[in-house]
Amino acid sequence: MSVPFAGRTVIDLSRPLRSGMTVFPGDPEVAIVPAAELEADGFRVSALHLGSHSGTHVDAPSHSIADGAALDGVSLDLLIGPLRVLRAVGRAPGSTITWDELASQGESACAGEIVVIETGWSAHFDEADAVDHPVLAREVAEQLLARGVRVIGVDALSPDASAADDDGAWHLPVHELVLGAGGLILENLTNLAAAPDTGAEFVALPLNLPGLDGSPVRAIALVSSPRPHRYR
Picture 1 (cartoon, rainbow, N blue to C red):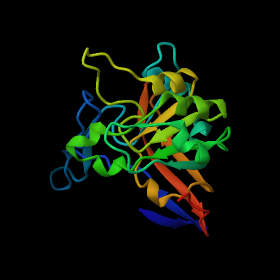
Picture 2 (cartoon, rainbow, N blue to C red):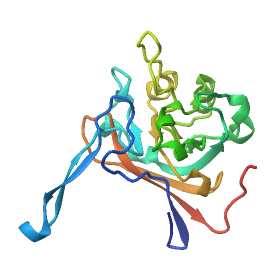
Picture 3 (cartoon, rainbow, N blue to C red):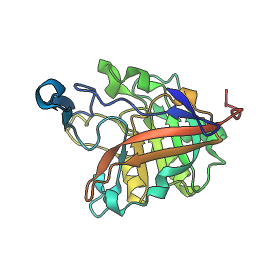
Picture 4 (cartoon, one colour):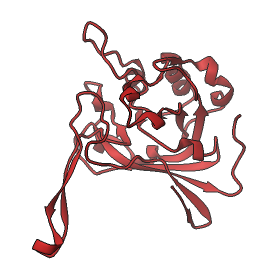
């Protein structure tokens, strides 16, 4: 969805929160049900049941780092800034996206930018193969962190694999690097194809949930016209 705002276009990069929507394996299911109804009570109220990582959301460092900051220890200005979209669409299920594939788009990334990777996998969100999304190689996070980037996002369930190994162990190298460096990870972004590669301002504010490890966000891109060049 795109709407005009103060001479700019607002591009919604957030996935709607709905009952029964896809969640990361093992996370709480999303359920939204009436708690009060207009006809019976004179007003409407809904009861929300969801996990802190439902829909489009931000991971705080405490999500996977033992001494990492919780949401209330994260500065909101990290989630407001210039947007850079790196394109890596058309990958096979479960494939790994390397820095070599992204370097021409990402080598000029710099501190203050929010860098998100479009894989095209948001189109599979409501399908059984949502968990088979491409993953980022550890080197992608290393290269972006080395350039001063502190917020990295993807249009999939995770930048790491969304399944445990055969031995039941979870391996989250991108989470360990980014969150371990005090950065943030955005997951389940959508509509990235509508955003320019550069030149937009990004905003994704979490709920005010002290002590928690993550929160749904309403992520948007603010774009001035004409739109900047896209890598193709």
